[in-house]
Image 1 (cartoon, rainbow, N blue to C red):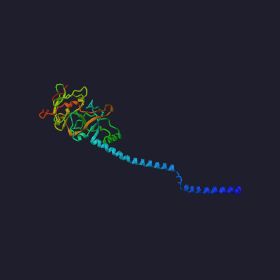
Image 2 (cartoon, one colour; image 1 turned 90 degrees about the vertical axis):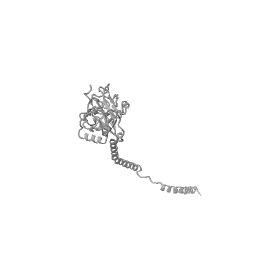
Image 3 (cartoon, rainbow, N blue to C red; image 1 turned 90 degrees about the horizontal axis):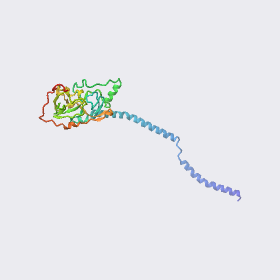
Image 4 (cartoon, helix red, strand yellow; image 1 turned 30 degrees about the vertical axis):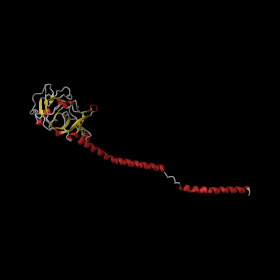
Amino acid sequence: MGSRGRQRSERERRRQAARPARAAAAPAAEQAPAPEPGGRAERRRLARRVRRRRRTRRAGELPLLVVAALCIALLLKTFLVQAFFIPSGSMEETIRIGDRVLVDKLTPWFGSPIERGDVVVFEDPGGWLKGEAARPPRDPVGVKQIKQALTFIGLLPSADEQDLIKRVIGVGGDTVACCDAKGRVTVNGAPLDEPYVKPGNSPSDIRFEVAVPPGRLFVMGDHRSNSADSRFHLDEAFQGTISEEGVVGEAVVIAWPFDHWRKLEQPATFLTVPDPRRSGRRGRSGRRAGAPVA
């Protein structure tokens, strides 16, 4: 066989050897998945669709969250804590004009007894607010309605409540009198050391002696010369005392302004007051016992 014959035979062997490899590669190529057209763009579209669904779900949940928050605020105002605006100076320097105080309404609601020295908010027994509460200027239309709505749910303190704020000096059964030889107010014969009274004020310019009926309270403002409290209603029924049922709650903290923030606690002087004696003296008829003390 010549050289050309040998070359043809060699090429034929190479072709025959290559055929099985090409035959094996063909099925593998057929089985490989074709590339997905627009795969990255499709993923972006799906991501945008998911984000739109989340935004829609959140927008639908927002009204429910607002309603739930308003209901919680209304429950807090009704049963737990309420903010009150102070329009008068009858409790200075403890509480100033324009202060906002937080009032605990839960404790009296559960029947916890009111104690001497507590600062309480109570409903006007009748005519006490005359000349005492200096009301703030009127708001323009629109602003007034918004404030009324926020006040109703307890997010703003009300400036229109017919309520007063005073300090409890005597509780049911106590005998409150003024004044002893040193000009101090006494409760069941024990003189009170009253550092909360506004500087420059005497404990009282009116002499009195009152036996507090059960279920009632004798209250006074810390600004004694500017407080139309129990002393100014001695000639009325119950000798100027107020009913415990009319108490809205106990003021526990001055919340606003921040530079005047403080907790309202029972003064130590009331811890020394003895319990009333069963055979103690009866108070006078409630009439003032003389001209104001100089």
